[in-house]
Length: 216
View: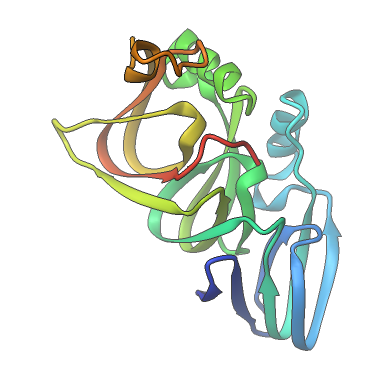
């Protein structure tokens, strides 16, 4: 079920009988029709292992199941919203950035150390987002949140993209990521915060970057 962008901070979804979607609790702004909202304790399609992963990382984001017939408007904290449409690929996104997503998508949890080894773990500490990330796979739409708007940067073979870890929102496709240390321009001009890290993404896909270094 695709989202309709009402404005940069609100999206609307049509809910049909027999279908369901998941959203962060408290993300519903308004709705029309006969729609129900039920607290979800199973972590979507990821099941128990998905929840265990996030519990270990202290990243459990409360979800609610949305069902019925009608339309629902979603938004949260005045954050900008980016809609990502998946066509069978996997989206990697931090759990607290998920606003709402199709119930048809398969949800899981990936240990960040599995991409980039120890440096993948370091990335979790640098971003302050823990050592696990949420995965959503299949055909459907996902609404993610960010500060200051989002830009989508394509990743093509032989042309990796380097991203400030604090500005990273999500990525999809056949992409590898690794964290590297580098002396950036901010350090050179005295504006650095001391981390001097870059997140390098290579392969084929896209990465979403927010126009801010502020955490949600």
